[in-house]
Length: 391
Ligand SMILES: Cc1ncc(COP(=O)(O)O)c(C=O)c1O
Image (tube, rainbow, N blue to C red; front, top):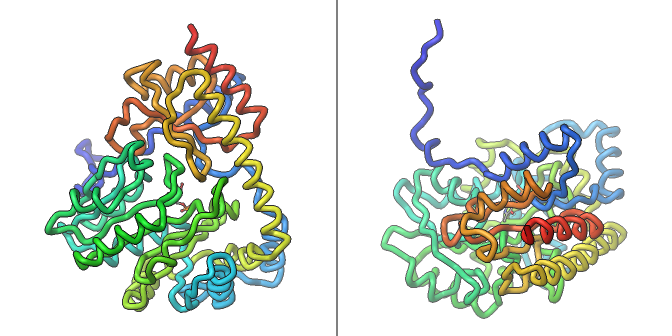
């Protein structure tokens, strides 16, 4: 017998917001199905197909029957390869036993917040920032402290902001460098100051480095060069172009290794085996060469789009250092960025992301452009936006 009352879904789900951009993407697909042309500047993943050496390694692994679980913390050879990458790329010593292979950076985030949070504990996060973080905190019955960040701090947390935000129940602070949605990186000096402050409070610092490799003016240094008790999130999704393979990693401070291992054994047993074998090819020189070419293409797109959007009147006060996003103030055209984004999609056929997906702070004045489509499409997108705002 069916009941009309609402199903007994746990209360915490009331606080889990959808990604508004997914609804917009759904609408964009509908419009495309009706034959309309849409320029996609909302999608947060590289448009390039995974590099061929990685695909080949995946095929070879499948043919060799690599279809079973790996150890929970990951394939020893992959953990070793990542450890060597820290050595060769950053000149930082990270022993392989502190590297946990996870189902995407998302798996790493789930582990970190479950390991750190007791009910009622608080975590300081940047607003605007990557929205899933606050939901991971909520799933663990924690609270988030949304620290408002703006152009004056290059949209990043600082030690002073942390001092102002920290409360007696705060256990951690988290930032992403480069950040989503703003693309800015945190300087080593600021990281040092934040680490010193968080340590003085006996808290944990979590740094999401998922957009490393995609910086255009200077190389981003890992926060591990500041201290080795920082939780580092990273992934094969972005620079390595493997979003759909669902593979990331977590660098775990030594005292937490056993807890992370036990938790991962229970939550997901192991990251996808096929993806792990494929990722062994990610660090080969020929792969890195291809990935760096993609990075150079992103750099050219950033340079074009930044100048073009500024020229038509968007305010982008801070040049993003990396990732593939531009976070722009659209106040000149609308006081409601969600409405602006909907109108732009319906009337001009351009899909972008509203500020509301990244927090509350000045969200109605901002939109995010993703340059995850080729230069020709970006030029057409800008032409359509210019027409739209001039009418
Ligand atoms: C800042 C940030 N962290 C984590 C993730 C999750 O990535 P993954 O595909 O590795 O789970 C994303 C995805 O867009 C992101 O932007």
